[in-house]
Length: 158
Length: 149
Image (tube, rainbow over all chains, first blue to last red):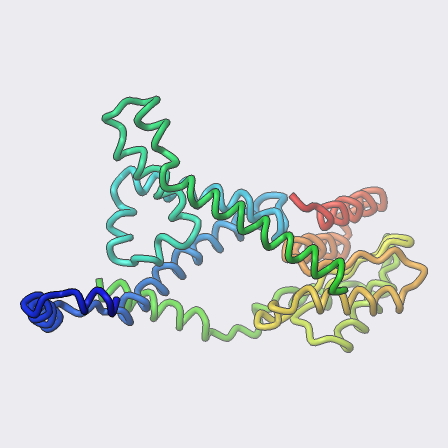
């Protein structure tokens, strides 16, 4: 960063200063608070769905997680299709992307974006363009954590 | 959009700060068991386990049922202690197995198991369950508590 600044001409540096003064500051704290509450609200809905499965079906707290995740992703997919999730994301930012609903949004928004290219090469080929990296990172992170846990249990006597 | 934020914050505060002493899970379930009347399966062991575990641990509620050598205990810890749920479960399991060495103890901290045990106890106190059904139900709940997927 410092090197980049050194290479700039005086006029460019002056412009950068001018830009820094005029630039609208990002409301980081406000965004964090919004993301916290929107993300929390999504998790609250998830909790309601989990409780619904526990009370009405033969699911325990442990097993109710799977259908809950499926339902949450499905709802997010529907909301993305109707254009509601995008509005929520504009307000909540990372609060809508971090929970599992963000995954559903990533799949469907990519599918919508490429639908003009056809069903196979467009929708099918690009559906997991964003979500694929999420799956890959998730699987790899799970593998690493499992490896660390196994090592700790085997040698650390945890 | 600010109204939405304020509604969410107010809702969260109101829901989090409410105090309902009467709404505790299991409130009233223990009381109406008719002691002395014909209980199809003797529940002294279960009552004993409930009493001892509640004395030794900080629990929100504990419910237990027994059938012959099988003892099924379902406990609920206060919400802020759920972070150390596994630790508490391990400790309680050890305690229960030490107290009832000749029983096959199954301990669960799961909400569903707690609900099922409460329901079963309710049926017993009302007298709406037979001995065969009782045994079958306990076996079903034990199986459910061991399910992973």
